[in-house]
Image 1 (cartoon, rainbow, N blue to C red):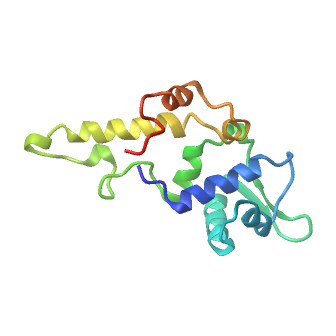
Image 2 (cartoon, rainbow, N blue to C red):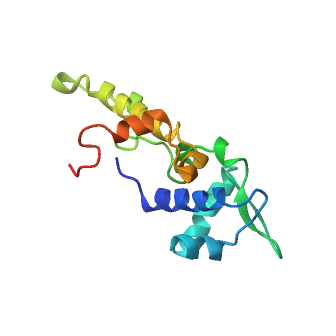
Image 3 (cartoon, helix red, strand yellow):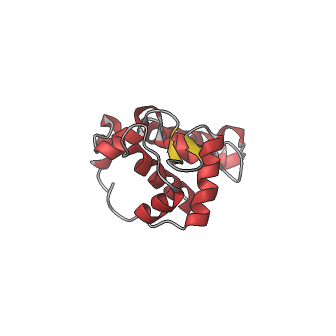
Length: 152
């Protein structure tokens, strides 16, 4: 699976917001500095997150960005979908929309299973889980699988 810079930056910004005291707001400049992100790119990402109702913003003194709902209610998958679209696509199509013939006839099932596997991690893990380090049991089990930390 490829995680784009856009998704990585969005999740990192959201984690920074999740780590704030409730009701606090932070400027895009501070978000960019804290996570060492390009400010202009981050502004575009925050706009997507606002359209997806994941963040709110306020202009002026005391303004800035904050989470639109508690960190325990926002999943990592929500953030990625907001900035990059569906979690798993095959040539720009949803896995269930693919069809194959001959020896590849059952490949669609593999692509659907890949999407389900990705969802089982990203849709089970909230921003609060990541900030606290108390990851869901399924994620912890996946980290213990043989080869999980190896480059292959």
